[in-house]
Image 1: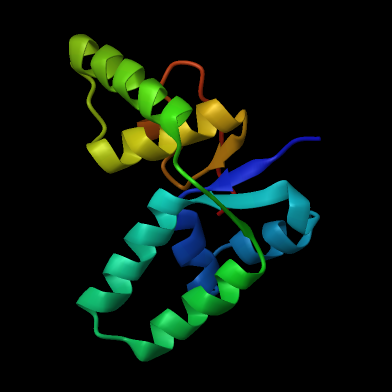
Image 2: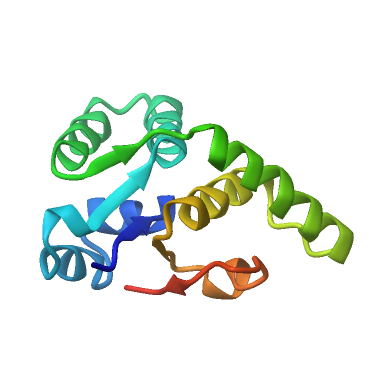
Length: 131
């Protein structure tokens, strides 16, 4: 079974009802969709920065319907490996994105992101755009 890890931008699209992300999510079984704890953290940070109870409520509702994968030791090791490769190549993508990419690789998930070009720099990562 193919499993999809949604990047922060894809969840944001779904929460705002933009693009086709919501339709794509609904076309899969709940067991096929997950997010990283890193994505949950980025979403919460955004809601806090906006001081938005409404956004927190939307995040709560979304997270109830998907599995939030814990970032573990295997993902930490992969983060170090991928971050180093990207730095050596001169193609950094930012630490949070490397964390999420490493998590997707470790979980053997397809990463769903609007930023395919950005994430295509990560070796071993499969990316789809649902927007």
